[in-house]
Image (cartoon, rainbow, N blue to C red; front, side, top):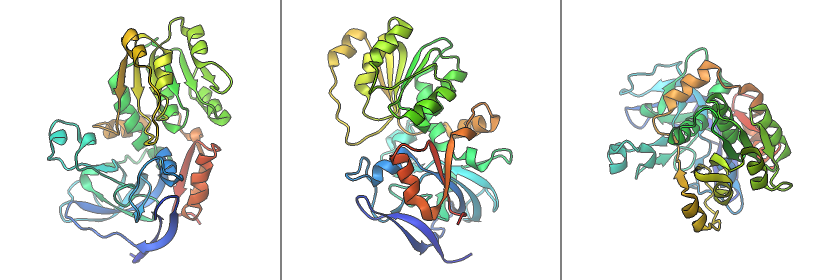
Length: 343
């Protein structure tokens, strides 16, 4: 194997530099090296490269965490993987010994290391991962669809907190890839109506294709007025996948309804009318990363229940990483994949 590889390295606010760096080496017996097949761009990657940044990243780190790879080298302690096996990664390595890990909340680990934020990630040709973070892929699951595993695992963790039943009503605020996954998943669970809220015209179109009954442009329509017209009293559940839309979710739920907050914007500081939560007897829940949901995500992707091919709007080579991120920043794409083996 060669000694150097191409990688997109975060070098400080707004600076993502494509450069040659050493190929990672195994440092612990439980680690393995994977050759990246694709790595999709997350909204977090866009936030980290904004000026000012909407999410922190460590300078000198290779970004990217929604990756699919194949094993090229294994450490002496790796027991479940062999060279050639394809895998996806839970990009958040937990310690396993802190109080949160011991209470079955590894996503809240006090010493968690996030791939593509704290340690090197997938916008590269190769990646180093711990065996416990990798999930083997069946041969029947294509690489582009497997790239949805990380966001879908996070969605499943959130969906588990609300347990939507058939004919319960939903409002999904934000129709990026995560919002669209929520729409498809809750559609399959029998939710109705599903109301999406999205200012971007392209994403409104995709929300309807994914199963939303109505998609509201909040710049042109009063969201609560539309919700009440369709439900009479408000939705049973409202989900914010943007990270700054908590006031909207509280406004559109019925009395006794539930808000699920999934989006994460470190700069968001919305004004909350707390009395609305009180008199509505609202439940406000947060959901963070994935927790014991990766295996389920892989099985669900392999089942074909979700229609995800059409959501992939762009596949670009690693050398065009800046354009790939800008496509999402401009709102001109939905699921954007980076393939280091192209070009």
